[in-house]
Amino acid sequence: MGKLNLLVVDDEPGIRSGIKRILESFSVSYPFMDEDFEFDVLEASTGEEAIELLDNYLFDIVLLDNKLPGIQGVEVLEYIKNQGIDVIVVMITSYASLDLAVKATKSGAYDFVPKPFTPKELRSCLENIAKQLFLRRMTQKLQVEGKQIRFQFLSVLSHELKSPINAIEGYLKLMETKKMGNKMEDYMEMVHRSLARVQDMRNLIMDLLDFTRIESGKKQRNIKPVYFYEIAQQSIDLIQPLCIQKDIDIHLNCNDKISLKADKQELEIILNNLLSNAVKYNKQSGRIDLIIKQEKDEVFMSVIDTGIGMEKEDIDKLFEDFVRIKSEETKNISGTGLGLSLVKKIADLYDAKIQVESEPGQGSTFTIRFPVT
Image (cartoon, rainbow, N blue to C red; front, side):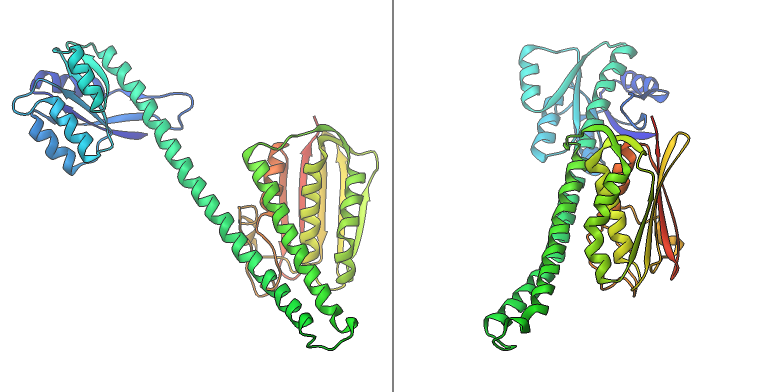
């Protein structure tokens, strides 16, 4: 249950106690709110007392009578505005007039409740304010999280792009000054390493693009029957050069009739990421099995590798954004920490379930079960 702190400023004890009584068992609930709001009420009988409370406590709402002994409600309202106090003010007064309304609005009053008011009128006013406060908090939260995501993106980009750029620059300077001699073949190893780092940067950029499109919901989806054998073979062809470098055998077990209503590009992203990881985290001369089968009302896809594996406590972290499992075996393996996060986000679009089995030094099995609709 959420709490809204409310200050009642009125010189009539009956009004203050009446509002407190009305709100004792009252809470605000809307279908779009993830929690109900109830009210904690403090009282002030004068404007001076109200200012002292406002200086020492954080309030969400102030119910403010204009006719007060000493300084008036409008003066309290002006103090709130001048001090930049973040609170919603509702004027409660039997002396409402056009001049007062204009003056109070200019000073930041949100609404008016005329005296005498009914419990229903008060509750209705506070329901609207609670809705506004909830939406304001959600907006602030989104802004903060948006900044955090942008910071993470920039951090990943600066970290992941800096190393390969420095390496490529170093190789080019060696070639420019002919440090290794005058023959082109003397520099082929540097060329190959530079091309590998260019590919790493390209993979990073593609991962970030896929991530932002799916996360923002702006990616155009083209849903139609997709045959798994076709995209599996394409993904294997794409990953084959890396398999050759590590002497890894990759085997496909898939009936060419198995299909699913899906976006082909989304399934390619899933397969490319799973197979890429199965190669990167595999051992030299290892093996990968890609098994795709249909059983009753689901299609399951398993990628099984003979790689370095992982501890059970690391499995739960795998699908978080920008997370990479760090160990002695992975310290020299490049990656963005976005690949499996993308896999999870896309799987969720299909209500698909992901299972991971792994043993350190024995390899890992990633299985995704797609419901067939």
